[in-house]
Image (cartoon, rainbow, N blue to C red; front, top):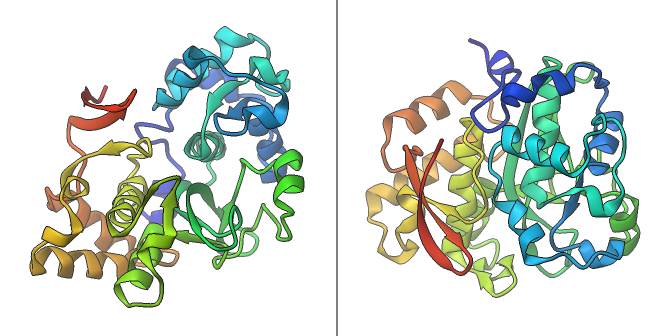
Length: 292
């Protein structure tokens, strides 16, 4: 299977399951799909910008991992076609990962290679690298992978004063987790400048790096889901672990030209792969979650 064929197919999280029929009438061009995604989801941290005061019950929708569960909730809130923009109070609550996952799922439904990527954006705070996800898709006409930030609608772009094309995010504006790892390990950046809120540092960088590697292998988990080496503190990692991670970062920091190698490392190394269960931070505490 070629890389493009692999990423043109659903994974466990992007699969719409019993709601696949909702994708039938969707357009296949990226700008239209981004508008549709923005008409379905409201970001949990941006509610106030849209005049929303989200209840704790509504905020809990960010715990919905799979597209099948997200689509079910979308229909519960508003049974209209996905192409019908919802009023803000009828949009499902999500975060950057969910905008990226939804766009990737819709693109895959059209046979377009797509993959959510986890890393850090420079455009939320010019002094910091903020934890973020975007969707990367294969532009057949231009023969290259392109980043799309489906979260940044007109409201957010105006507030952030965005100057780049959000449908082709420059790679110096969004760094995948492995690129951040390489910068910090090489002394080119301060790991304390990477994170979100009061969470930052080399362990945070390692977490986004490993979440991105999992996402490349079609396991796009929530930003607070933990497993394997994510649970091991950076300062305690033995040299062999650091060497493996450095090799993996070299392979995934750009557009992943040697994906077969990445897949083999991920599937053969129990320190990296996501098993049948994970640990996840829910309501301020760590919970054991079985993946279904």
